[in-house]
Image (cartoon, rainbow, N blue to C red; front, side, top):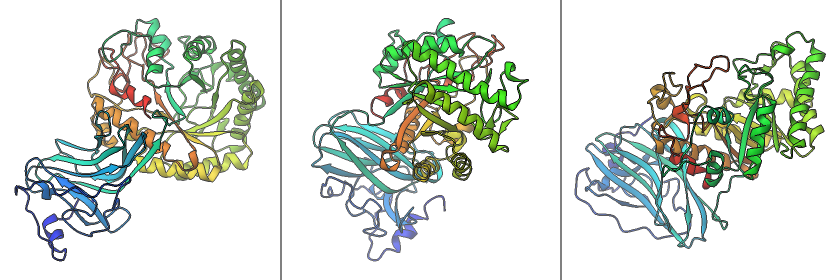
Length: 527
């Protein structure tokens, strides 16, 4: 079932239970005994009951009975449900004490039928501002998380519903973890792809902090916790951007901010992704040996130039979203001998320039475990050298957070390499800022499970960060947000061959239509 069974019937079946009917005036239950970790995280201790063991409940409008446990857990027999036949507001919470100061994360698996005024997990009374993550509309179990800094030795973990009649959520398998003494971000990589930034600024694009003050965008990104920047490389693009010279220019700016650099080779004159991997025009007549050598020489040339100017790449992608290979048709995935030779040539060039630069192999569809297993089994069986596995995962295209978590966990364990999300993004509005239709629309909002609001965008990004941080054995490196600075600037559209093309991405940037930084940018400071 995607929703709760009828709660009156379920609760009545519990032996000896006295049910408080929705709408009855009821104050909060006595707070459960405080501890340093979540008590009864799977809601199993008390079976079907009005108030789960270890949890307290309160309501501002007398609908405390809207929170209860019933059969149908995610991993056990029971789950927490919020539901009532009339409008209700209920909070299920635990007060946690004896905590060391530092960063803590509350995670839970949730489902929701949607429609609530508000429905969220929160961490409050921790020493700073309350932190929340909205519970997305989702028929299947999805893991979400929220992080805060504890500075007072205590914190309240809370599940809140402010709902209309018949609205429901299910919650199970709650975790509260952390305690790192640094008090700062814990993800090694808090990255952004800013491949369109130089062209944007050359065409008049400006960037402001949340207060409206115009700032250098790279300084602003760094001030908000970004520590890694990604730049794509095209061989001979029509507009002259994302080529060797422009990448060198941007690399100098990135390194001047103390950030690390990921170079993303598309091996094309234009966009390369699972649906298109076009050869550069200059390579079209090459036989396979010449094509393999061109991959090596192009990779070496760009990276050696970066090294010569003192901006050595820290990580390099050999290909971009190469689920079906690259440099079609020669390197398509139906000819793995060729594909492996091309990947090996690129990887060898990376190491020839600088042996400590990490090689990243990057696939799309971050929740597609069967495809990724097949692909990396092929790569490893042919001895393709690489250091890191990267995936793209857009929640509205590539599946749930739980599918991403399962895939990353498996890839990290199966191949013994660290993993990261090389691309993700989410919309903060459904409105457009130019005439080009936006990619992220109402149907993708529904598929993604988070509202198209500034807070929804921030919540989605934080959830992806927390999935990667949860990969066992410290193998989850971090996340790159794709094109947070690609705002709607005339002349900086999607098509490098058409200067009048528009931007279908501006509603997924981390700057609003007044060029001000959105709440999503601040996620990097605590991710």
